[in-house]
Amino acid sequence: MNRKVGANPMPAQLKPEDRKTLLELARQTIELVAKGEKLPELDLESYSPELQKDGASFVTLTIGGNLRGCIGTLSAYQPLAFDVQTRAMQAAKQDPRFAPVSPDEVKRIKIEVSRLSSPVPLEYDSPEQLPDLLEPGIDGLVISDGNRSATFLPQVWDQLPEPEQFLSHLCRKMGCSPNYWKHNMLDVETYRVEEFSEE
Image 1: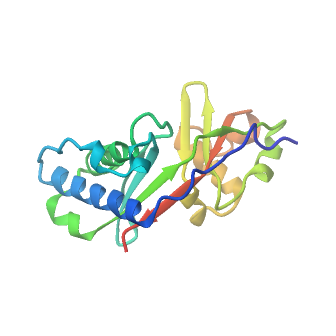
Image 2: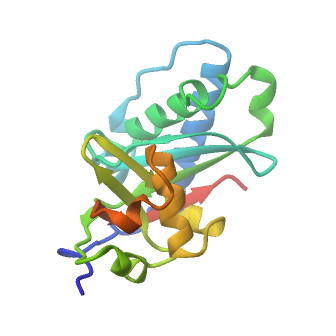
């Protein structure tokens, strides 16, 4: 039974001041987007070296514990500060599940930022093995089948603690039947996140 191809390292945790900077950047972005104002160009040199490095992130918005928007990327292709600004804008304005955030909602929104490690392939020999290879509460998961794919952040384990349940809901998100993973060999990748949110 296989587990992972190669390591799945999480970069060193961000310093508290870097986390605070990213949360403030996300909030400023959402406030401007809600008012229909243009986002400022970021002065990359004003950020710490860690926030200047390429990074992949998700930004999640909630109101009263209910999801209000969540968008991110699995690929680290731009500086982390830029990426968080981009995802905050998209979560507030472009999540197809929700209307754009309105100005009167901004104060009620809680922001969570997730910084992702690079996804690592997970090899397995048969569908029934797959649930046993997952680490609930730790693994973020990407499943792909042809040109379809879907991902769940590790935080989703809080709502779906059983691996079979987690996989079934992820298949549904991909546009397949919940049992699709039981009868098909999917391309599977795992990743880790460092997540932090406003108090």
